[in-house]
Image 1 (spheres, rainbow, N blue to C red):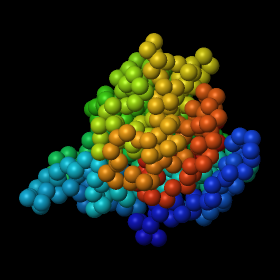
Image 2 (cartoon, one colour; image 1 turned 135 degrees about the vertical axis):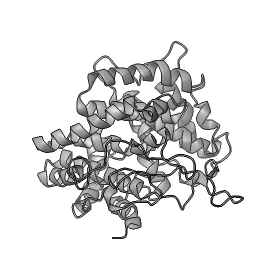
Image 3 (cartoon, rainbow, N blue to C red; image 1 turned 30 degrees about the vertical axis):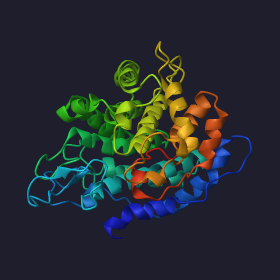
Length: 382
């Protein structure tokens, strides 16, 4: 298969009619037909890692993940000079094959993991393990556990801290890996890769810069570190993420009305607001533990997940009420089956959130939407 077909083939395999079945909210019953249809098709898909393709613009090697900044374009006045920015407008000529391969992994492994959770049939877990070994263990095909060459900009940077957002698609992969009952060598190898990546994320200058970002990038850093710390059993980083969620992310990003002003200021305010809210929701779900419920927790002034959901829910229910300008690209494609609706609906006792979640598209096929929709297998989360 041509490398540009990898992601679209994976998306097509996942596509299935939305499950609208039972009147009672029974998540397993809702998800089962869709999960098994996708997982059965994924059993025929072979691993494809970063070693399958390489860009001549990459400063890294064969095992290094490489991507380019989405909104950077050649300068018409200086075609051979450094790229210039066009915020919100994705350059279709940028190298995206590694990102596509990672998104493909994030479609396949969680679907197989969810199928294994439903059926306990080892064929699903074993095939997921093949993909995990290829990406994280086998020396010939594994990805190096860093993102030193992600979100590069031609003529400006060989990599940037903002590139760390590309591995948001490993969050659900890590979630699945922890539930597959992997053989000891596979489990040890996968955990070691994520432990090494965590070390890089929390010590490298790129990781520090991403951690300190004021917008969705800072949220996604916490979301990833929390997920990878959970898989590797790193209690210190789990505690750090919970503290940062409560003392940095919510206080610095959420306005008194529950909105995210830095996301509203972008040229795609609706999509970015949804994306950031989902990243917060995934972090809150990951960090849930006895006595630590980030869904009901709030600051003294009321800011927290409940208020953020209350702000955005009416615009998910009826987008025509959205008070900001439409997104410059992909405006009509949102919302889809946002995980924040499911997680909040269950955690906050909001049946209207669950009802809307069930009505929305569970299987988007537009590549840009899939790229910004990193959690698709709720059975792994609740």
